Length: 239
Image 1 (cartoon, rainbow, N blue to C red):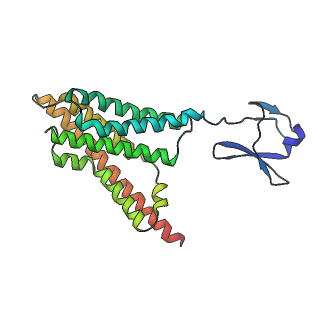
Image 2: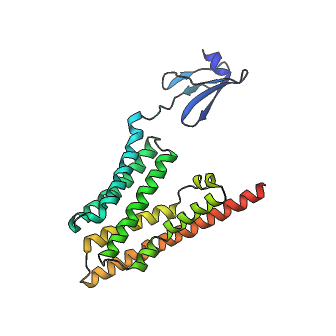
Image 3: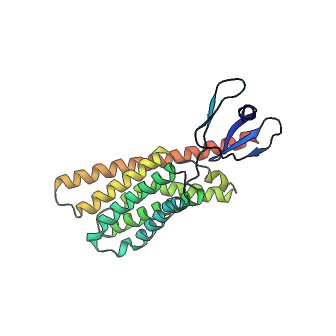
């Protein structure tokens, strides 16, 4: 057994350990006991491990949370004012939890990522418009806060128009984008927690959070535009 494994090499394709023969070139999925050690005829001993695939039901949890957040977004304008703050907090927690589960258990997929993005943007847009309708925010403030989402939507339309939507699909999540999402949720929590502003500290708190969230949103929009331009230039150079 040890001499057989001496002639083989291990690769990883996706998340499944695949072993390929150096002579035959054929590959198969080995299922050795986890952590079994081998002593080859030459060279150092090595240990073969196999990465277990995620439990099937765990794959559904991030999508269920995203679908729940989308449902909360649809119902948000019709909620009583007293329930809006708990719903914003619940939506923010669900966004964190489904992202953690997807990364921790390797349960992410492009379809799940799309559902998560749609749920996030739908909830943020509806929550901001509801705040504008309740005179908790000004329309121009909501416009600045949504600059990142507007930029992403325009980039997606541009990718469809030039028939390069696959390039848009491959755009990685950026730290500016994650920071903008965190800033928006923090601002929404403060907006619905404070309500109508009557004290100076309330004005100062909301303005501070607004400036932070707006700056992150604008920075994320610029970052995505730069990423798109770089991708287009790389495509032209490859041709």
